[in-house]
Amino acid sequence: MEHTNDQIALTVNRMTYRYRTRGATENAVDDVSFEFEYGKVYAIVGKSGCGKTTLISNMAGLDLPTTGDVIFEGESTRVMDRYDYRREKVAVIYQNYNLFPVLTVKENVLYPMQLKNVPKKERERIACEKLEEMGLGRSYWRRFPSMLSGGEQQRVAIARALAGGQRILLADEPTGNLDAENSAIVMSTFRKLAHEDGYCVIIVTHDPQIAEESDCIVRMSSGKIVGAEETMHA
Ligand SMILES: Nc1ncnc2c1ncn2[C@@H]1O[C@H](COP(=O)(O)OP(=O)(O)O)[C@@H](O)[C@H]1O
Ligand SMILES: [Mg+2]
Image (tube, rainbow, N blue to C red; front, side, top):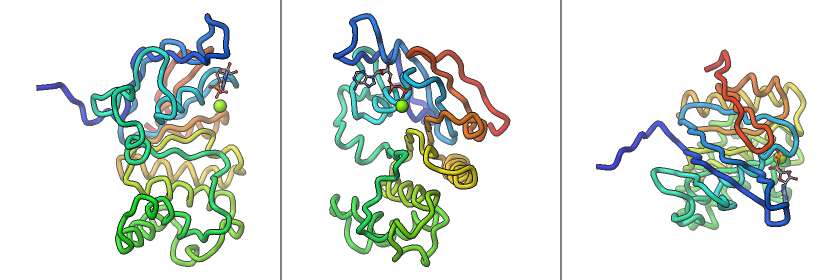
């Protein structure tokens, strides 16, 4: 029987990524190996240009490593159906929320499920459930994104991202546009998702205070992971 460990969400194994436009010797991600577990929030930190976004893009299945692998449930992203992987296994959110401005909060969460032909009753149920989980009760559902704070908009984006049943949440600078108060709210949402619901949450941040709110700080420098330390929250 194959050895499996259901605590591990994603394994990055000797992963290297080189942009074709760059010099042959420079790797944006350079021989990185790491295991990300369910139930934890990880913060990837490091100077601008050190490879954080490249690593996240590869874990999200948006890119394939030049060498090495990103492994989910024993399968490399090289061999799996990456369309299914992106649609069902990993959720990605961004700094700018990317909500549809002409759709209400609830319609934003419903929309991707509509594209996937989730039955109407089912998608209604899931949308309401995910919004409630993000602390966005009924009074928010008919509002438009412009009528929400940045932190609330980001929580709508998280609800939408998780409506496909994904257990892994990847976020590139999710609090980059938020003030300290809203950042703290979004971070406590991530901690709840990881600690109470067992999600694996991996964020990129340049804010040391945000990183301290995670369980594990993963430090990158020049394309390499140069350290990983548990915080007091772990
Ligand atoms: N599309 C691209 N084409 C060529 N080089 C890129 C591209 N995107 C990023 N890079 C380079 O790869 C390295 C890592 O970038 P990136 O992953 O965006 O770092 P970070 O997110 O940590 O700021 C940098 O040297 C950057 O200039
Ligand atoms: Mg980046």
